[in-house]
Figure 1 (cartoon, rainbow over the protein chains, first blue to last red):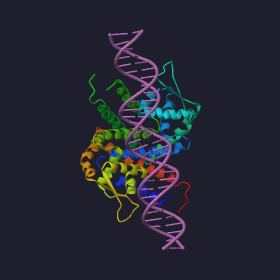
Figure 2: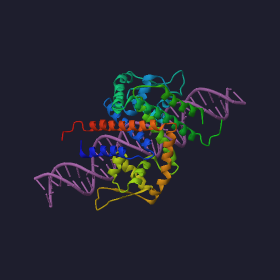
Figure 3: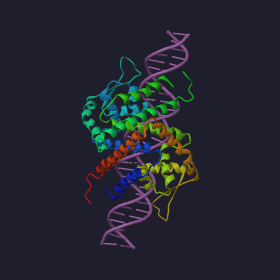
Figure 4: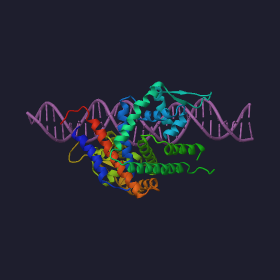
Length: 171
Length: 171
DNA sequence: CTATTATTCTTATATATCTAAGTTTATTGC
DNA sequence: GCAATAAACTTAGATATATAAGAATAATAG
């Protein structure tokens, strides 16, 4: 590790341990999110899977045959994000896209054997990252944090949704 | 608001209130981060400022004259991210990039009047988003969450850093 | 059963980020 | 003081996301 690497990390940490502005929570969440992604990404890359693809695999391991629209909803991302990811995953041989019951609009997504087999390989990696991240955090703190994040997600979903409907007619 | 919009939000929320996998914390953090960004982004856009630019403005309002390298450290992003953002901010008339003391390597960043004036306009927007997000969260929960996130950031910084130095010689 | 509307997928384009590699400039060790 | 090394910035190209708009298809209202 170079001197610069050390300085870099120290700077990020010092930043957080010293500054206390009013919007601190948002920044903490953002930094934690970036670092979590980075840690997992590095591990997934060793198995040729990107972070974005993993998030769809994870849903498909639980429920196969969802349409792209339904996958987007569950992943909490927009259709174009899903579309791009699924096309790449199809090219990588992780999934298949099929029309069902003669419906030529909806694309239903199914795992290939390769996609299925990755479950047992990748799941422990995500659990490992979570475990590393939460080292030294008590169960009570962890639970309070989950509860707070859930409340934040609920609150922000309302905020973002109410703005979407601005100007639209009632009913 | 269309039926689809409602279904979408409901799907995201149901997802969180029902599923409890082992890597749940990482997903909660990620979702919260995305929604926080979205809420703030929408507000900033009304003033012609993007989310990425805001994060650098915020640092510069506290400390002007930092080099790009120092700004990258404080923002917790890589130099190319900083570079791209600063070039755009320069083009938008928010900042100036200057060489100091005849050093032609370091670029020091200074706010223009326009950049300075945005502080009082944008800061309340970030505070508003934080306030909305944390509605109904007790001070104790909020504090426990900050503490947990800080621990996670520390833990993950170590994880990411130790992997960087893999294979490098000692000393 | 046809015209309108809504849904789903797709394309195009933009933002925010990254890693890897290149260039210029400064620092350091003989 | 010059060669080697390191630092700082820049460029190139990739990933993950978004919004806006287009195309195909299904559902619905009359």
